[in-house]
Amino acid sequence: MADINEFRTYTNTPKRRNTFYNYCTNRFIQDQAIFFLLVEAFHESRSKRQAAFLNDWFIQGNIPQDLSETGYIGIVNISSDLQKSISTNTNNAISAVGRTFSDKMTNHGGGVGGFFGALRQKMGDTTVNASLFNTAQSQVVTMLDDGGRHGFGGVGGVGATYNSNGTYQPLGSFSALVVRFRKELKAGGFEPDKVGIY
Image (cartoon, rainbow, N blue to C red; front, side, top):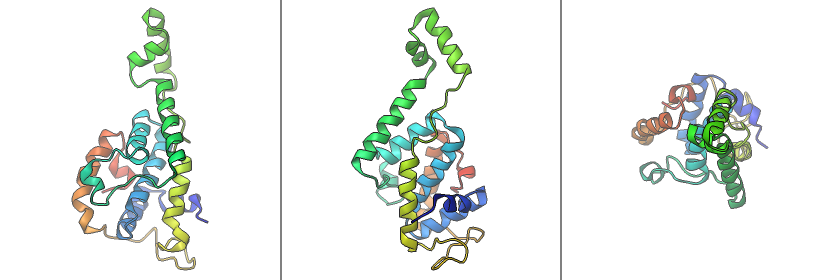
């Protein structure tokens, strides 16, 4: 069974995240690696924009055609019930804090009272729950490990070929897509260099 904490040690610095990403492109598991890295970044910020991006792209599958047809990015492989649950929970969490100031005003009854209620909320915590994607992330870790078939297994583990301090070249056929994807990541509130996708 895959250990999520082991994968977190593989990705605990920007350099290690890039090494992890590059290694995974050569195993054609980059979409799972990307999702794992983005959820880890989301855990730090708990941003509504990032939650909406993860939900829209990886849970609901609204991925631009040029990125999905090439096999670069795909929907997270989870059951349809779990997919619906995560999507609903994400949308509810975002709606609860409101996307815009006018949403917040409406949630507080509108008018002058709604304005001041929204203002108080804006000064408080406007982030969403960090655990929204934890179930999907744990399933992705299982797919990344795949019983040790992809070379993960800890330092010196049986069949371990991955070295988190090593250097790996990304798969060349995906290089043109990385530039496009980085633009989408920035629009979704992520910092591609910090996430390790370059």
